[in-house]
Image (tube, rainbow, N blue to C red; front, side):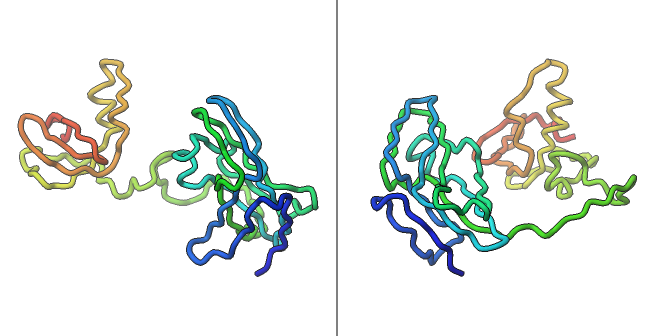
Length: 215
């Protein structure tokens, strides 16, 4: 598949065919100096004629924040196939968290093309007739065994347990009116020590839980 591309500057390095991965790096076509809290629409120095029924997604590179202290303010840019004129240059809108300098040809974002979704037709119904998954924020909830009492005396070091922090937070911290940030790690944890407390390793962090929290 070939894509017509126009460059707005001789300084900008030409895109190359990639051999690994699906994303292609895009470079700044200008030098940009930003103070913390400032933003800029950074020119990428290219325009493209995308294939029919394709669009491009433009997203940050994984190292963009580390290298430049910037975030892409629209998080993901979408370039439609009709954005293909001689003056339809691509841009990347950035916001600086710290003082930073972006030089010409610095790789600040990446893109890929994807085919349009099929034509959709919506049919309104009163009942979907499917089993509820559990509501918003319940991805992976099917893996959690609910309403099962755990005997803390049967737990041992090395066991993998499921932390129902939504229930724990409500039960143990609701009366104290404390919003507990440390209880946001719903998921798997490994028991590393058992004393009067159960010491857990959750995502590299260590938490102490009373045995009663597992009941």
